[in-house]
Length: 224
Image (cartoon, rainbow, N blue to C red; front, side, top):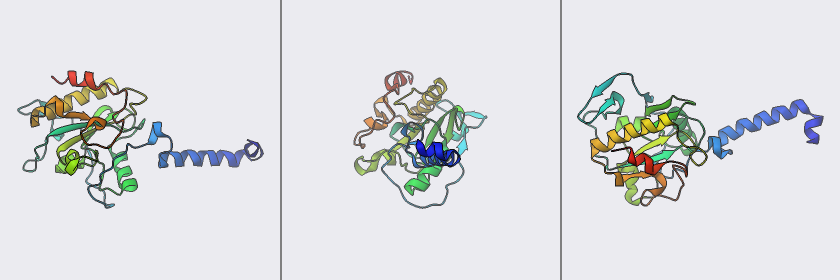
């Protein structure tokens, strides 16, 4: 405190710089900590193709009235067998921010999730962003530790922006999550027993993701 009184202008600059470094370094877990994701499908610094947000136009398919971007590319669609729900463990963010983080801090080829659902901070509240992994139908990097890496190879990773150890998802996030997961489970015949939170995925490394306050039971009850 004595230093701050003696050099108020310099101290202010130091405090601002420390705050900036905290944001970049993830020291404040409630705002900037990315969840532990322990599998890397590859390395490299080249940015993947641009992320696509949910378009305004919709189409009818044999399962539901779904945004066009949710449909996998013709001829490349995989037979997915599970859905895994995550939280970002941050108060804010979007797919582009997580993409940058995973490249720069993990050395990955891009964001580890297939879908990111915004909370109104850096993307719209309930906005569903579709990542390059889903568009290319390639394995994710969101759930490590499973035998033969099955969760990343065969599980669809959906991340909601927010820290659900401290808060609950927004109403719009939950509405979008229910709609998205209902579409995915119907399209691939995935039963409710194969819809997991990250921490309850069989074989996954220990984690509290998607957070202690995520309403998993009520979420599953809304899928029928």
